Length: 190
Length: 241
Image 1 (cartoon, chains in turn blue, brown):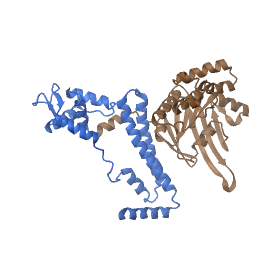
Image 2 (cartoon, chains in turn orange, blue):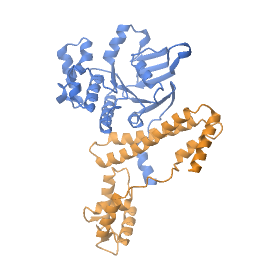
Image 3 (tube, one colour):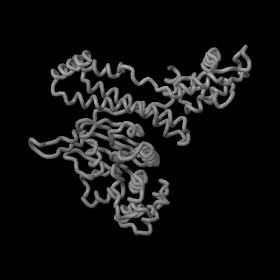
Image 4 (cartoon, one colour):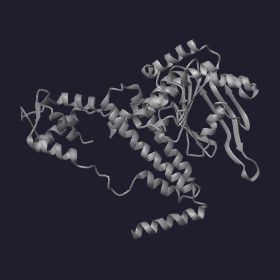
């Protein structure tokens, strides 16, 4: 998430001090994403430079300085909220590459490699779920962030499961190589 | 702490000769009271077979299953049936509630089958429903309940009385994510209350509610998670990024 746009969103509710912006940012992200006060002031300086926020005291960014969003800042926030995130980048995921490489390295069982990653992902999911389980069900900020991470990680585990099943269906090592190379040729032609 | 469930060197073979299928191969599993363990694996990996053997619904071809210190293979048929009624609770994906009985009657049934009088059984069943926030649904029949409510009734039935072992097979498979989370919160709470829980699933989100996740493949346990580190480590990793 962009800290810049998160601060604009907090200022859209009304003028605020830097310290309060930090506290509200952390509270709304379920304290999963702590910010240091330096990050807050650096981002506010850039927002002010770009005329997206303005402050009472243009000379300094001390704790007494109150920031407010400008009309341009509201337009920027509105545009950002409606802009889809980048989901069309080419697949250069490190995990996908590791599984593809494991397929070609002699003496390496690709299913063992897949299982090692599956276990690591599930352990990470356990930590997030534990955070959710121990927190209050009314903590919406925490719930939204933890769920987003859990669904993302679950998607990666499901890809590993699908990859595992796909590779299991290949009958022999020689065919693994053949299938891989045919796939590469098709990918190149595409 | 004594393990509520111990599976020792359990194997299960279906059929014989050329049609022989090895569903489980030399599986060891120990679950303590207060612990929730997830068995995770793909379809056909043997996870449901392991659950039915652990719950005495089916016999292992070889190996031993010990529930609360009692070896199932040394028990008579009647004693095993009594153990299933008194000590083990089951939760299934399709709820398995009897359609002609109300929620209260469904929950009271295992107690009544165990010889407890109807009045006492109903009082205990109502307590179990109350603990899951379902007391206002006690008189409803299964077809008058939502999917989430039916599964909560099934959990109330599984934990009614003094059960020590809770076995669940894809307990939220038919539910949406909010109801799945509610079901897992209830199972986790039951385990924190001193029950030993085993959930089998192919779903990583469901498995992540467990204290320990055991991975099964081709009838063998191939891996398990370490004790999950504190969630504080998530905070530090965010700070670094």
